[in-house]
Image 1 (tube, rainbow, N blue to C red):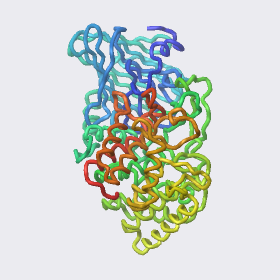
Image 2: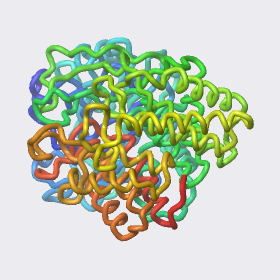
Image 3: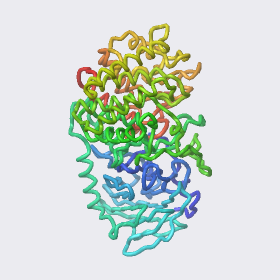
Image 4: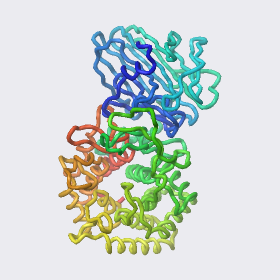
Length: 591
């Protein structure tokens, strides 16, 4: 292995296309594993912390378990019902597997990374490299010490312990090891990284694996009616892996991955978007009152009770504020983008998030999963809509402040749903009256001459987001405006079986951005609502296939190059996959 600590890792483990990365996660953090067995991304101790492995965006830091033979091909798979990943390599002399997981459920202060290497059919030689670099690569490992076969040290504010690597040697500030395994032999590596003093005794590998397996078995709901059971369970597992112990679910595990090369659209998604959390809760409720429904309700209710009409679009998983967006100088970034951390969403107001919150609470109420304090959050959401219904907002796509039709119609749907669910008894009539007023308001300035909904006053374009309010019950399925909108979306925004959000300009759709996978699943639900079952299933299957071997979906899909675009995995896409799989397996009914 090269001893060049600045360029050696970057040369050996360059970035790959996103479809080739797998995710392991424990609720408090996630790690992206590349096809060479390199952990190219992980923040610690929490999602919003600085990265300790940042080679994905050009930073220092990597943890690799890779065949010593330079000629090999890669594959892998998730163990069913979990985020336990098995990297698999076929070399010129045999087969090697590495079982990978973050010990689950995670501790908010300590990451425990489990890697079990196995020579499957023949002797195997495996190279291992550990170079933990806190602060997006700024802080080298220091104070490295080997005692009783266990390495300890520090990087920035984090304490480190690495078990199973007693034969590793230090080279230029990183640790390197050559494992030689006999056929069928397994070898465990356990890395602990903590913001606090580590426990006196190292984490036992076997115990950690058993606990992780048991926790995943307990996390996933029992098998139910679903159009694609394995894909549906996998999506639930992804969503669970992105959800912390406090109920907050990050929008994605990564940051700064470009939606389009050199277009400036590369954001930090390691935070909890209220809208995304509501999408996930509603999706889960379509199958049953599973844990992620309660997590979503609790997190959203707490934010509403704290902030009311000043509800922010996004928060950290601990409920704290999202930091301001700023660049990370000195890092080259993932090809086609420049790294940035924080998010300018913290300066926005998004009216539709209040409507989505009511839809979430209504879904929980139908399962009798609302407590008294949740009903107080319902009251807070209704009051916030009443107070801010006339305010321009950034909308679902987080653009310029306007009076977006989608935002108002989503509030209509939420108010109607919570009224039907028993909104504080006498207040049901108030919710219905407010919904009627908002619907009339949207019809006054956002009804296109063609009879469909348009995006905003003065913006006559069609928008795929406008399919969702009808699905959620803002209007009836047969409402002429909803039907005209569906026709317009299909005529103007569909290409090759995928759906785009809206037309940016006169360019072909694919030249402005990628197809939006969330919208593809929304189209499947819209078609099912209209009785077009076969077409709905076709849309579902087309969009769920827009992934690589690990089955992870991003926000956008480049239809021309067949590549994933944006941060990964995108939670709300997996949420709508889960919901679509549940709903398409049975006759349509209003959520």
